[in-house]
Length: 170
Image (cartoon, rainbow, N blue to C red; front, side, top):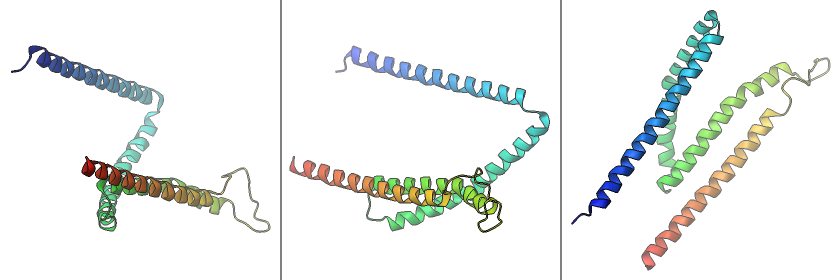
């Protein structure tokens, strides 16, 4: 037999959740509208064509290159990380994706530094442009990322084994 209060509370909670989602959705649409209005009001019409072309190329690069590439690499990683749990595989994939994005951001800086700051006598180096060693920073980032991912994968594996032992003993 079902109690009437339990059913009423469940439907009330569902309605509250629906209203929260609807309010957040409306807030998001309002923020997008505000941003779009501000963009169109402040960007000259001649630049709108350039922005539209950039967005189209970005969409083509994302859907035509990045998504298939990450899908293929993810499939290969599934074979390489066969003995790991799905959570551990996700951690490895996430770490590699973060590293790849950081490399994509740093690669133009490294290249620009090579072109704009040649070494040697009479090179006319401008030390105020592109300060820092981006290649070294990227290498350190990859090492820290690999160590952090390995520690988290090991911790998840250890926690998973401990919880399995507890379930068996119970």
